[in-house]
Image 1 (cartoon, one colour):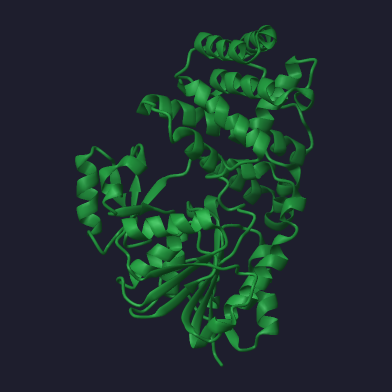
Image 2 (image 1 turned 180 degrees about the vertical axis):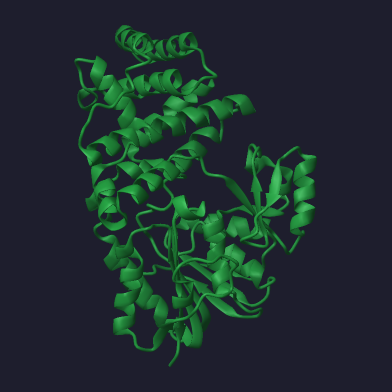
Length: 441
């Protein structure tokens, strides 16, 4: 199977089953032997098509009598792949882009190969002008240019203003950097950088988090010997800051109520130097297996993985924990760079999230000891999932107060008030919200 075939399979899976790109890639790449070059091309096509879907469809609709909303999924998937290569990938010749896409179409249905060939050749003929967007309305224009569901852009325009929204859209279109979290139980950051450089990986320190490393050309990570030896984990800086804000003392008792896939759990367990206990809970068995596997790979013996629903109250855990983390399910609008398919979700899909978040936070707060710390975090930039949830919680729970965040090396607005709003366009990290609350009585 070549790069384009695997890219086609992944894109079809995402389009048909509303699957997340990273999960679809992992599923389809797992049992296929691909060279690093083919793996790179397939990944480039997959993310490129997803990130530019509406813009590419706008071009197709200029040329086709049958509009994309009427096309069969496999036909528009092939067209999107071909047009992405023609319009965005200078490393691919126009001839190869057309030829390979048409050959792929013939394997799926020879009847449509002529139609696809005609559209792609028209794109080449009109290459200088086909990408022009002739739309006057600001929201409609930005929705096509950056490929977003219009409600998101409208929402951000209202809350952030036009200039900030444009900067956010631009930042979300950048490919995210890959960051490693050093397993400081096994190796120092400097030693890990040296080992990575021996593999010809470009690695550099990140000043915001002591154990963080930025890498640029690390391929096939799960098969990397350093990863297998448990010397590092993959985790974004924003996500690492959650553990840093918690700043748990050694020998503490910690509860992570929504812990999958386990990055924050294992970071917290490492910060405690493998002492005390981190009770790591989630509701899905396959996700719990991931946490167990990560803990084992990192040689962590202080993680206790349990199946439990954060929406339910565990009476046996009331008032028991020194630290509790509620990293709640959210819209994910802060991590669009990593999961670009989020751009196409409808507003209704997120409607039930704030009530769920409030319920999980309410339950999580019951588990905190007097004087203990409660962390609430999300990977979204929406106030109705973030500070609004916290403010409502504080209105109802006078035994909790926001506490200044002085454990981390970043200087963000509102840190002294007890919460952090992180934006990709401002801070060059995943969009996140982190708040720190103390149980005062």
